[in-house]
Image (cartoon, rainbow, N blue to C red; front, top):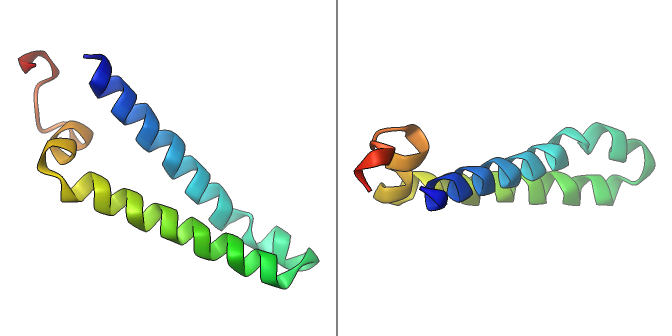
Amino acid sequence: MWEFLVARITVLITLGIGTLLVVLFPLINKENRYFAWLSLTIGVFIITILLYWVLGDEGYRGQFLGLENINSY
């Protein structure tokens, strides 16, 4: 049960950090252009790796998308 909750919270936090880096791009771009592009690149990289990790593994995909029953463990 706890593994399921920890996996979901970890995915949520990582997705939030990646999204924050992407959303802050216009604000950072006003101050420093290179740091803004670095932020955008890292944010897209984090989101891509996270989606690959979650959707690539059959066990995580079932947990994350709710395809498996939690009580079956």
